Image (cartoon, rainbow, N blue to C red; front, side, top):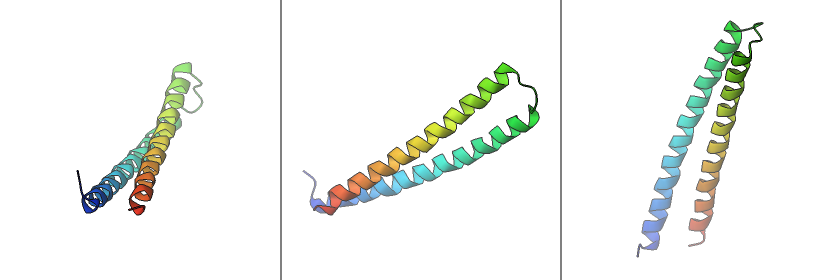
Length: 86
């Protein structure tokens, strides 16, 4: 069984790594935002259903990335609360 110090160190490492992962998710989100803006600009006025579908799917991707980031940070907070009880 791990010692309290080992558990705290592991939780700290988990938190740091997860925060780095969330930063990467945010970078991907920004890149997708730029791609979506470009798609909207080049297809403005077309009204084609395929374009609408592509835009809707990209918006879903952005929303799911936001949700993933929030869930990951919630996990970090939960483990910090757990470790604070030691």
